[in-house]
Image (cartoon, rainbow, N blue to C red; front, side):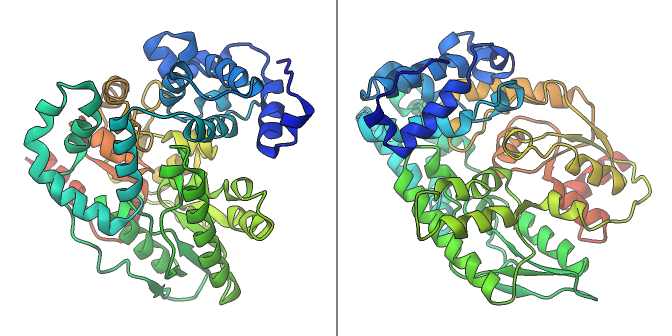
Length: 440
């Protein structure tokens, strides 16, 4: 794609980065076939190619974002299916990240939209606040149908709809500190506790710690780490996202200097994509650029790390798993086979749903801010998953778990929960209920 940025514009490193990305696009349109919003809406401006034109025009002309640009950029899920498809290697992720920051800095959203986004940024990255908000949401759930009558209030209705009927108790197991390995020590890792996941499903990190320590790996939960920054990063809140990134870099560098780390384990693939990008996010920060690169290099999804431990093959256990590959896993981190191979080795039969490349519609806060499109994608995803006629669904991202569980008739668990159970861990409640149902 031909560009015409001025030398003055290109003196801005973010604009220069975007200009290089734009020049790689050859207008081929391959991305349109795998873009969930284009497949759903059929609008060229809701495809990666269409959004690239809008971003180019906005940045090249050095103008503030307008309503049209904001509408179509907001509809982007950041699923990154386009980057998997693109034959030219267009780095759409960093281009749309820049566009969102530009929107946040130059566009004044309607009042209710601003308030809802501020609420999300104030609550979701902080587990204590999030837990209290979920308790309050239980009281407000009867109001959801009335909130849906007004377009500006639909995101609030979606928040209430997505809120769980019960909030799990905080884990007494996954506390800050060190969990020593059983038997001979094979490694030392830190685990990202996260923000939303330990509130919505603390059993995921519990299962990870149990499995790793049984395999001889010391697991450290350092004091001071928190949200990876993904939630606010995708809303264009650059400074807040970078502050989260710097804090985590400092915490993990402290662990590296005090005992060493073989890896930083992430059990939410959306967080993994962001942490693996810390090196890029902080590339212009002289105090953090090198440290952030080191942290990004150490970041591993739990299935990546387990793949290097040579787990023994187990006999078939009679359960069939439909594996849903989260977008942040398959497109963001390019992890495709490792989770499925681990499940097969652990004794599960694994089935791939049709249209596995398409997003389920969760995408961080997308199912709150874009509820109509999200609902269409969820229905399509659940239909394809249930067509596998599997016993249970496995995936590696808490957002996908919450989204799919709200509509699927089959139970859904994190991949690591199934692996923990298969290799001697506690039986998840969902497996227990499934086995009782099968025994009847």
